Length: 271
Image 1: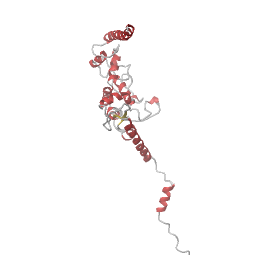
Image 2: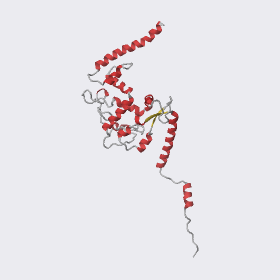
Image 3: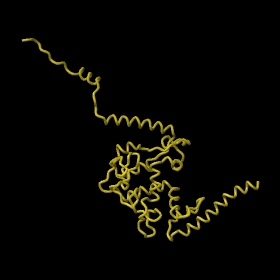
Image 4: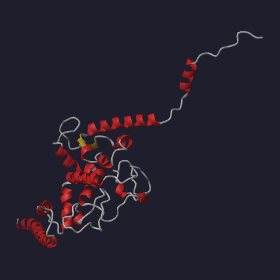
């Protein structure tokens, strides 16, 4: 029993010693001005981050929906650059997305890139510790191209299923389609499918486009409802693609047109 008690207390003792050392490092590196919610979150963690930048990253990772809303708000403040339009491309050097499933980001494209000190997602200046506001009056951080909140938002846009637990809580554990209780196998779905966004909303403003990848267009539904919705969307996608194709008449169409045509007038007599 004594050996078991000793085994259990050793990790706890190690964690306390580690947190004591990390807290000392954090307080030594902490500037005079620092966001209070970030510091409060850092001190409440099981493992205290040893530097302010890790504290900022941990804060936004713990609040992904808040980070996503902030990233869209920063993008709305920047707006799309002049002459930009949502395009796809296969050349990685151009910065264009290869698929419509990736959210459009004009400031990642080579033509509109703002360079170090500006976020490649929202276009706003990046300040100390990856923060979005210059609380320290030091100007932009020339060694950074991402806001800490935009990193978390980008991950949510590209892999929303990683946040299924938080989205379930947001919907109070109820299916967005049926209102029934969500099962463990429930899945994250886009309310408006992304292929429809590419076909029908391509001309919308850039900040409005980002909303189709964000929380306003995300829902958690049970797996059977998701499968039925995907099947219906696949059928409609096939119908749309067929409607866009040029019409080539088949033999049946030609026969029906000949049967409905008037008979050619023949000659009544010979000279």
